[in-house]
Length: 437
Ligand code: HEM
Image 1 (cartoon, protein in one colour):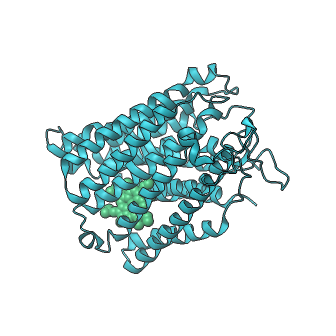
Image 2 (cartoon, rainbow, N blue to C red):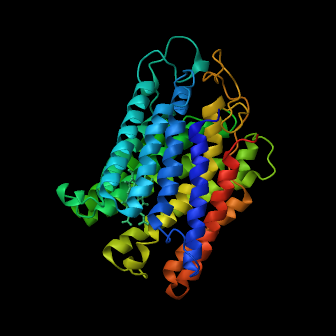
Image 3 (tube, rainbow, N blue to C red):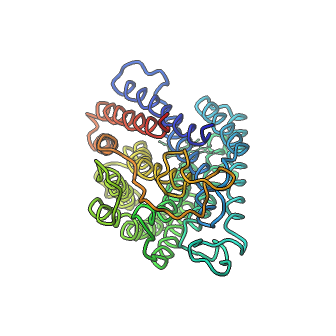
């Protein structure tokens, strides 16, 4: 049977494409069948596609790094997460308070369960972060520090707990009760600058060696600095709108930008097209597309980061009221979705078959129980996902969204174009995530 997480990721990608087609039609003034719901469109990508992938991938990636057998997909947790997601996807657009409370609580419980499991996988002394090293048992993943994505994942999931709690309360009026001055901003910051940023950074750490076709050089010092800067920056960006302290926002964004620049130099730039090939990447007819996705995704996250101080303190050429409705979409599609298009296929392969030529979700090598054996060393470099079509579609989509902020007269046409291109990219992703039969 197919991995339920992978199938659901493809399902949410296809649903996201449908919601994007709806938004394009609504922008062009044609029939909007979902009433152009922005919440649904964004959360099909952030909550549906991304969070689902995180739940499916992280237990396997951490087990692999810990030298343990790969766990089977946790079907109970999959059910819990998806019951919560579907309840929210119905309840929030209808603004049904009981459904929002139930759905949000279920997602919170599933997240806590995942975080506790990940904590357990990485603890203990009997596993080795480097199975090839042999000899005495190593002191466990926790001691491997920044050689694996674990610290990034744990910090990211903690921020998801905060983000999901605040998000669930957004239409239930929990904001005043929790003393939150600007709840929506707090929710977005916890989830995008916190949860998504830290988990993507963890994926980059775990995938780096396999993408370069061998053991990656030790980058622990830079990654430790990036973790502190990114976690500290995300916390400042969550606390700032919570207590309405704008100078803290600028400090947070400065820390976050420094962390991103460090990650870019340490993990993203070494995967640029020429470098991957030189490191002995597998033959690829389009070797540049996956790297280009990563390089441009991490440039898009810096655009709002650099614009934020001008928006907060004034002096921006465009009023904040025009940026606010579009800013989250620029980040969700230009950065998060684009990085996912590049990282999901190799992450799925690594999680399924330890990087040795595994096909998506199928698992290549196998242990004595028939499941892939985590101790297998990668023998063949993994490839980043993406194609020239997905790269052009997502970057033109993001450019059109940015242009729609600056050009009010062309706003509808530009957003219609952007959502049409988003639909193309999401359909491409859905098609390419499912294994060939
Ligand atoms: C339990 C889970 C979640 C709940 C209940 C939730 C709920 C909400 C609500 C009620 C809004 C405000 C919509 C509005 O005022 O128009 C919102 C906005 C947003 N959320 Fe979430 N959310 C959840 C998870 C996430 C996750 C995991 C992410 C990102 C990884 C995310 C990213 C966003 C973004 C970017 C927006 C701004 C959308 C816009 O204004 O265009 N959310 N969310």
